[in-house]
Image 1 (cartoon, rainbow, N blue to C red):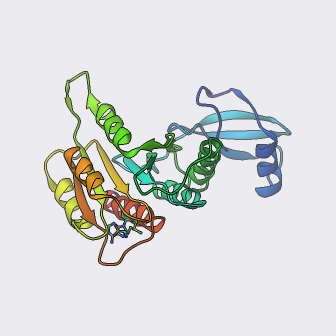
Image 2 (cartoon, rainbow, N blue to C red):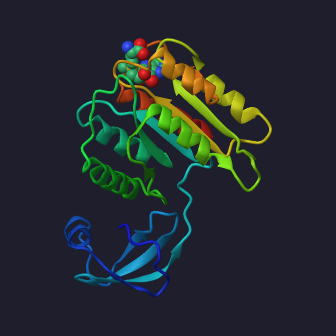
Length: 247
Ligand code: SAM
């Protein structure tokens, strides 16, 4: 169950109707029994259900289910409800942030209520996969604006130098294998503070978009010789990176 981040040991929790349903009907918990409450920002609590809407936080649980280096997924939104699947599965796999982007060939025009729906999917997937953190989900941005925002976000103003990020652009018909590029980055002294991976839309990235990414220090990488669907590629890239980082 996900709760507000400001809670402390001993606090009383007021559960929503959906949470009461989940504890009582889905988990079949009885009053007096315990469950895990997560604040979505890294802390897990053991909580005791008192019945109905009331629960108490007993104590913190130490858990480490997050990837050792935060992984940011920039994904050109596929058409239909493809983003639902991408958000659910890449959250299970451990992404820290999801940046939906609009590229030249993006076909989806996202409706404003999509973001709330996507956030709910990310929260549910984080709970299901026992994540400590719910991934941050950003509103869709055009590709050039997303690249600029990434540059701003990774610029450490306190030290006025670039933080070490490793950024990969998945391109279906060119580039070294992501596996090899990643191994090389991770074997260098000083691991990156963040890994970024970007995947394109059904029609692929335009040449200009690939050039823009390379100008922003992305490395063009391949996920293999087969062409993956715009939904499959971000899930495959996330799986591969997460697996490397767990090793
Ligand atoms: N016709 C498009 C092209 O040639 O680029 C195919 C696009 S593919 C359906 C959608 C996105 O998935 C691509 O933009 C790329 O980011 C990613 N992708 C698919 N297969 C890939 C592969 N084998 N290696 C790297 N990225 C891939």
